[in-house]
Length: 462
Image (cartoon, rainbow, N blue to C red; front, side, top):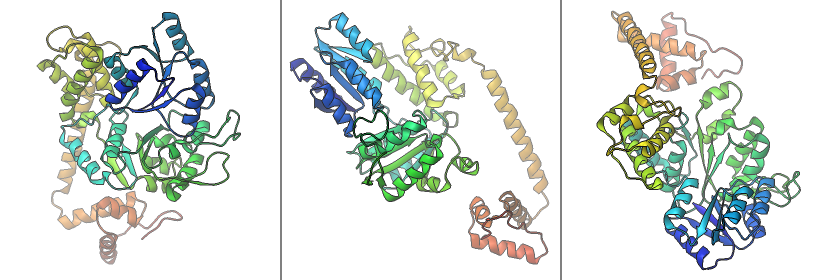
């Protein structure tokens, strides 16, 4: 958590800064709005601005908006005059902190805007396997692609990898490629020079330079425009970037992590994602299973969120009733960990008894979890499982009476047909070497079996 304090460090503001530092925040300080804007342009970076309400907060927010710098602002001041506090909120501050500050209020506000307080919680073997792989590669300099459905915790995993890396004491910078318009993302990533476009009143350092020495997370990389992908590829390969409007490249020393909730291999086939960029990003792939595939994590995460939101809201921490645990395990959680977190936040606020019962677990529309359309989901899952079971049974019966060699031959030829004759791809899918595949195909050809030939121009037959 990086906090930039703007204003004169009188006794009360200095005390608030000490409280922030005690929560683990890295604090920097400037005295004026102009100095704050200069620090942010220069790549100092901040996750939150704490600004004395004696300063012109409206001017600061106008500068940030004009220069496309995204950083929440919290106003603070001695005396807590209602009118001035209201003026600060109207100017764009997200919150007001009266001074002298309350330590719990400082901690709660910092936690509300920071993702650093999201530990990796897991007990399920499927997820523990992914964590062991992450531990194995974290200390390397390899680019890592983290994939999985929305809400499974890809950014949490990225932060975990950074914390386990040799760059842990350096910046961790995250850019949501899906949340920033294409025409702004280039400047956000690479920065710009003064006069590069309308509104570029001064040089601004981009996220690549801001992350220098540390880790840059490209969140939802699949949403990046194809033109910008080419510039990103060069930046990753050469470890240097060109600011918008710049005259010479700038060297950067960063480790790249990326996330995607889409199948990038399919996006490559569809022509919307560069294959060479995928190879650069996907040195190691970590696929996070959806919550429904890691039931051992559901209750562990639920208990973690109960503890977190009970403390944040100043309410008693209640245990989960046994019926509640069973209900949580039955629900498919299509929104994954994010949906579970929101549900438990609501449960903490709605619970009134000694335990959190089923009635307190409600979906976003207010419907109790126990009355959710689980029947339809469960029936669909059962129908799918039955259909798969029937297909498996029929497939097994079809194999009876054949030799292992015959079954192997059919599998190899079917896979080769699926790959349009591409020997390299087929070998990768089958998990055998290209040499082994060639020998098998030579054997089949010599025995008179029709072996699929490579199809289409440019297909590498290997």
